[in-house]
Image (cartoon, rainbow, N blue to C red):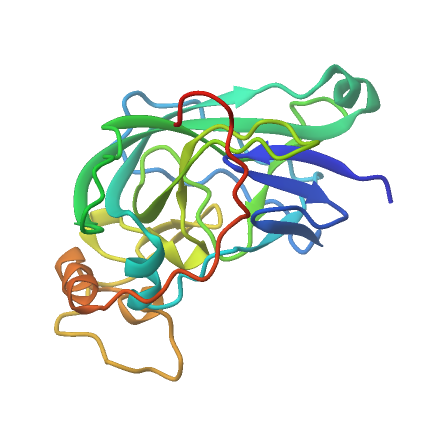
Length: 271
């Protein structure tokens, strides 16, 4: 199989193989692309034209294996620098290469503008702040034939980060990397893992856009169960409010950091 790579944030997505810092691979065409997602009218700076997935185009479903764990509150406070509420304000396309257009198949990238609405938790001593507005490359579209024949690429178990929706993200700051023989990876704010990206429409954890569709999670009152058959922090807090997440993070004790990419500092100014 011929290998093809493209950049999403600080991770390299590789079709038909395995990548580097966050190991990504294509799981396969497991779904027919649905129509456009209904978007709330509350948080986007301006309404983006809704691009419906083409019914005859099947996009790959990606899977991700992150270097850092994000299953528990202890994982969050060990590896994250901040937990924040963000809204996706707008998006723009990153055109495919001429080679992909001539071939009639490829990837249309996507960059979103995020607004940091609230900082829920910060690692003690972390001085660097998440910007009020910042950009991130996220999953775009797979096209076949003409680029207008497209379907939304998705990462299994993760939101796509769509305009008009809110999310809670546990973020860590990644310094720029200049590994030998590889392209320079710019410094960036990155989610700790798939367990650290929660839909948050209507102020309810788990409610909203997920894998490109809308997941409706009713509000649940009361404290979450302390244990639920190995459920993750995100799963236990489904339907709850952010103050319960803050309470969990405040009570959690950080462990020793055991995971992360090998250092590859760039010459000159950091960040």
